[in-house]
Amino acid sequence: MSTPTAPPETQLLLQQLDQAFNRRSWHGPNLRGSIRGLGAEQAAWRPRPKRHCIADIVVHAAYWKYAVRRRLLGEQRGSFAIKGSNWFALPSPWNEAAWRAYVSLLESEHRLLRAAVSGLSPRDLPRAPAGSKVSNVTLIQGIAAHDVYHAGQIQLLKRLQRQ
Image (cartoon, rainbow, N blue to C red):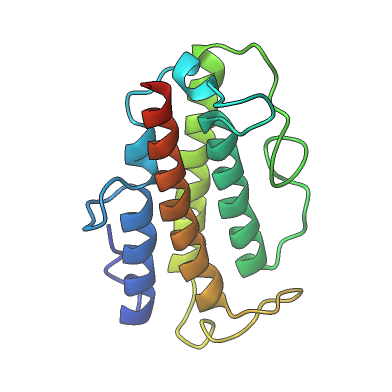
């Protein structure tokens, strides 16, 4: 879903974000599509002890959407909905309500990231935000690639569960 008032450069980045997250794309399932219809039990399954489950990946992806948004907007660390960073120690056991909350967090962080990207001007795109070694455009393209990468991991975990 593009933003008609955004400059063409920004619209292209929004399109990349959306195709990687929840819009139809050529590469197959996007991140949101890869978790569609999953329940808590399937999301909590681990191929081996101490390996990541789908729920871990969902919260991790939400965190990095938050981190990129925070960098784009120059915001301080520490306002993510769950204490910690990167990979989180999710409580166990957990239920359908917890799983839905993780999915909701991911969707919310995607909306907030989109809003941040929509507010960037073409002049902002090649600039590196404070504390970053890469440009805004690289951060945005990177978080889109991050979604596609983890969508693939989730697809693999779902197949492993069926073996």
